[in-house]
Each structure stands twice: as C-alpha cells, then as structure tokens.
Amino acid sequence: MPARSALPLPVPPLLLITDRAQARGALADVVARACAGGCRWVSLREKDLPETEQLALFARLREVTRPFGARLTLHGAPALALAAGADGAHLPDGGDPAAARELLGPGTLVGISVHRPQDAAATDPALVDYISASPVFLTASKPGYGPALGAEGLAAFVAASPVPVIGLGGIEAKTVPLCLRAGAHGIAVMGGVMRAEDAAAAIQELRGALARPAR
Image (cartoon, rainbow, N blue to C red):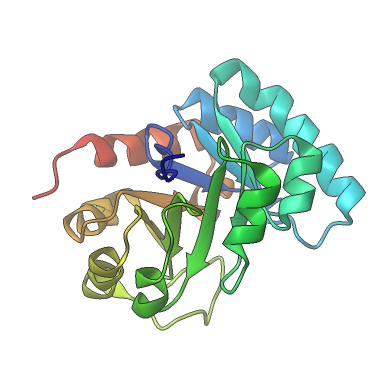
C-alpha cells in the first residue's frame, strides 16, 4: 500500500480557533458570522470545559458550520475528536501523531503545535497534515507568550517542515503578507476574530490579505 500523503488543507487556509472567553456574544453566533464572512475551517479549543460540555458545544458549532461546508476540528485529545465526529484533531506540542492517526484514520486532518524548527523537521507527512508555528507576533490572547518568531523565525519553520506551516499568534490583515513571504501556507487566528465587533468583516479582511500575492 502506498504511503499516505498529507491531506489538502481547507480553502482559504484560514483557521479560526475558538475562545468563548473572548467571544463577543455566544460562541456559536460568532462562528456563524465568521463562516458567513468566508471562514471554512474552525477548531474548537475550549480545553477548560468538561468533555461532556465540549461535546455539546462542538455539536452546536457543527449546526452552524454545516450550511457553509466548513471543516470543524478540535484542539485536544484525539479520542474526544473521534467522539465528537470532528473532521480532525490538533495536538499540543509533544502530542502523539501516530496514535492520533491510528485512531482517527486517513481521511481526517491531524495537526500539531511545534515550537522548534528541529521538531518541525521531524514531522512525518504520513501522520501529520500541517503544523502550527507560534507566536509569530506578540498576541493579546496570550500576553507574555513568546518570544515572537517574527517573519524570519517563521521562515525557519517553513524551511524545516515537510508539511504545510500555519502561522499563529498576533496575526492581522496587515501582517498576513509577512507570513506569506516567509512561506507560510496559511494563518490561524483567535482573539482578533473572537473580539471583533463584526466577525464576518474581520474574516473578509483576512481573506482579502491571503488572496493577494506575496511580494
């Protein structure tokens, strides 16, 4: 049997990570507005909730993302992602991609947070579809989390990784070109959209920046 290749990532390559503590209103409403603005990839990240509550919230998000055909993944345990019927799981730094792939199967997205270029280089495309590198810039969502990679640091992850790199941390529309020039496949955002007065408009602005050629 031929080796598995990494799955194509959603289009646009714009991952919205949830944080209900920062959301302006009900989380499902914020996610629905983001999808209306063109987001097609959302990941539930509410690790402080009991698993039963995460499952219930995931089901609610599935209701609002389904009409848009958006992929809905889960930051956390692969077993919980499987129980939720998620389209994939995002693992923390040091997670076990082999166990996640064995549990979730070949047709789901498996991503992992990576904080060192040498760990990015060790990523197995047969197990992992993408990595996230963070924080690219200092972020209000996690004050004190850093130091920031900057464009040069992000480029080091891109050079090392055999799978697509998603930049995460403090990314705004005006800094998307820096990420693209560094070679990032796409971006992940959280607080900037969660806190936005108009989540749809925030996503549209980011999509516009992603669609412009990197210069």
